[in-house]
Length: 296
Image (cartoon, rainbow, N blue to C red):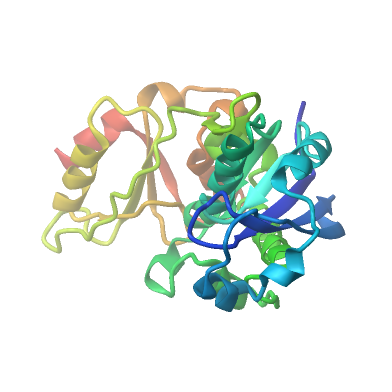
């Protein structure tokens, strides 16, 4: 089943215990547009800390008489079955897993995609320009929202993903296949692609190196350790980046991965680079063995 629509989700908690969910925001996106929005107030059966109340404004009296997560899980589990869930940072996914464990519930039968991770792979400029927090990203893209209102945060996360899909030409399904999580009977979601190559390797290049001025990104299964490849590139003068952008001039792909013909088997970096090349961006895609010869 190919996933095209999704539900953006955010939760707020009563205190520092991730299981103390007191609000859930759900925003349904259909065809890239907002279809409907829902906020569920929840009795966490726990104390509210002043610090958390100051963040989201929800007080014990606001949730008095509301359902607990024991009653909410079966309802949202049925609504979210086989659905893509967009959330910003691992907090929301973890909070729901913790609450499921607390109430002896199964995991939500859905697919998870973290908009923060999508943003990191789509726009590397935010690493040195305010970071990848929801507030900074939303402000940069002109998304107005009330921060720490669950439905508003969910809406912002969903809009960030639709923006990333438009900018990268990488489909929702491809993002999920590459960096998504899945949960079924177990409360804790599991990575769909356990071979994800994401790790920070960014570093500046040696100004005396023969490739000074080039900006390089690595993807796919390399025969040498990714740390070692980044060091080799840096010594040769390349600035090493972690994600694809218009500043990238070289994408190094594992020899075997470069021969793949099915688009779904290529990494998100590889697919994004190809889409950008089609749009006129000057990026050279080279295989690992050629890269070794270039820097050797």
